[in-house]
Image 1 (cartoon, rainbow, N blue to C red):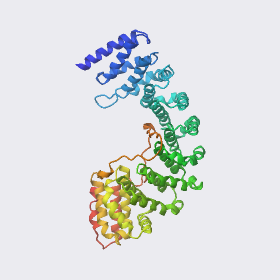
Image 2 (cartoon, rainbow, N blue to C red):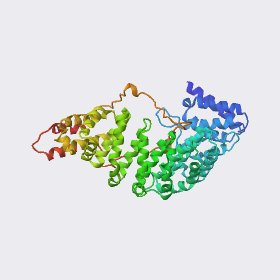
Image 3 (spheres, rainbow, N blue to C red):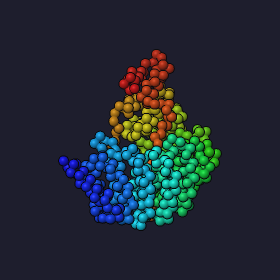
Image 4 (cartoon, rainbow, N blue to C red):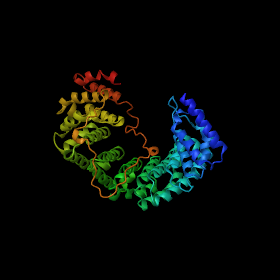
Length: 503
């Protein structure tokens, strides 16, 4: 009954205030009708909401800041309204007749007095891009020019954080939508975006730098190698002052990961590996940022040739063990186990054992007992747990010192822990003294990092599709181990009988 009443009132309001009177008349009544629509949008029918779209687009031209702001906010809200079945009430087909007028009026509204940095209008633009997807592609070239022009204006004096965030979201959406089917199109965006980005970096606009790094990462990840324009920037990314700003760190690490993935050989040829390891060492020393250090070193392990990294590897492990000894936390241990397991996958279980034993005799036994057996089930994240499973499988089936040697007594326990990793829920317990938020001793104002939703990093498979199922990989590896040692029934043969349930 309430829905019918709401619908009738809404229909009456819009008939009187929107259709009959010119757009700049009765601003208070129109604002009231828009506010009513925002409040009761979930009670209004899909037909009524769809019928309201041309009226809302027209109201974007109102001179009243309140009216065109309310109109933009209403558009953004109804684009996110869900139907009772869970799908969107408004879809692309509903919007196709109005795409040009919607985009034109939204961008024109940004030029009206009082709305040059109107966050509600910019958010409506972002939501429109997200809703329209491919339908917006023909309009992107001129719109990108408008967005970069606005970017250069606000970069002179950033004062509206929400407006700025939505502006960068619109830019990242433009790149994502247009390059979705054709990564080669990214070069056009680089031509348009590099000049304003370079100005922002040269002017040291701290509020905008994390956004710039995120979008640059997004574009670089679409390349098969590192273009010269990016490589010219690379040395500047290692400058210590950039890493003193907390808000830069996640975006900078992602950008360096993209450089490593696309141009590991180029980085090595330019003798920049020591600089990357310096950044890694700084990050690992921080309780707040040690996970970022692990992301960086894992990218090096995954993409850099072993003959390049070999000379640094023992020092890398020493840095990790020193931090473990001086300041052990659950978070650090979880990431350390993922790193050890990735190393075992990449270079073999024997290589991991030998590296750790080269630091201190019998240390690998301590790693097994005090880290793997104690904490591996605390590792979180599907990809991270899969890396641990694959690394542990390497240790169980390739390392003589674990299979038949000095650490053979730990073999069944390690296998049992691996099975538990597959079968039991994640152990989320954290010691009481670790329930804290560390604030680094950094002077002055520190801009926080703001993740761009539409520039999010794609899901990464470190195994490149070679190990689709870690459980099956364990079963197959155990079968191979069993076949290589005939006449020696071991506990792994019994565990291998579980392979059907594991798979």
